[in-house]
Length: 297
Ligand SMILES: Nc1nc(=O)c2c([nH]1)NC[C@@H]1CN(c3ccc(C(=O)N[C@@H](CCC(=O)O)C(=O)O)cc3)C=[N+]21
Image (cartoon, rainbow, N blue to C red; front, side):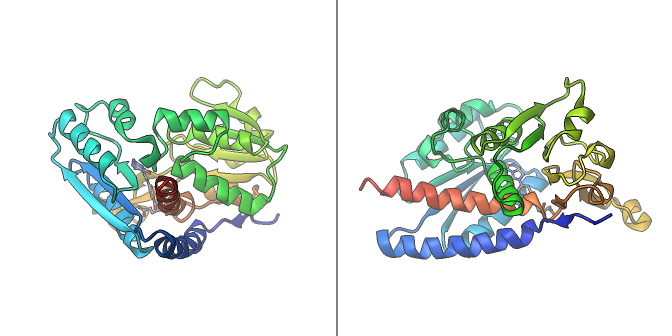
């Protein structure tokens, strides 16, 4: 049996970021504007702080301006809305990202709908979700956009492929299904009430797992030669006994990677697969937003 090709999202993302850095250079020369990304973090969640710092570092690394906003964990919803309003009107800001999850006392949909859709580099605003659903160009959610790049890289055309998306979240599953449909796949979306998941999986040329359950997708479910995209980021105790005793954790995906790699033709690892693509696509969206916002003037 041949082992699957391991899709290197880290390398792909690094190449994409180099290309974005070139785009930023050209953009600056042509329009005399530096694209700016505002990242808003509410509260002190340690994982969110790490992600946000990474986003800020990578933003400056491609030559864009990174603007950071930190609000207290008990900041009011109105304070956050006021900040968004300011950023919506700030000509130096082309992209706005409010890091999720937000504290419980803040209503996430209200916040996401307050962001100017043309600055919504996460692609979470209803207007952008709607544009994606009707098939007109828009700011596309970063994780699904990154998955599409990896799929097109492995398969070339996706036309006529059977694609199974496991998970129906608004940030991954649903937009992923829309993008696969736009690429002429036959798309199935599975979720917790799906009855014949294994059977559906066995028919899929493409499997995108976005369920948030460690090693949920088994190798025995896969059609030999399937391309498997693992969106899961699950923190589990470290393998090494001493590290585990010290409370250390590691990250695993939604797919039983070692076994699945013996059946699939190509598969993304976790870490080093989809994750790094998410940030690269965020930067890509920011350049796109800056182009769109400055083209009228
Ligand atoms: N408004 C908003 N937009 C987001 O895009 C958003 C968010 N909120 N909240 C949290 C999630 C999570 N997310 C990731 C980004 C990069 C990696 C990433 O680079 N992962 C690496 C490293 C993993 C590690 O070692 O921590 C990898 O998978 O190889 C993962 C996850 C963006 N998110």
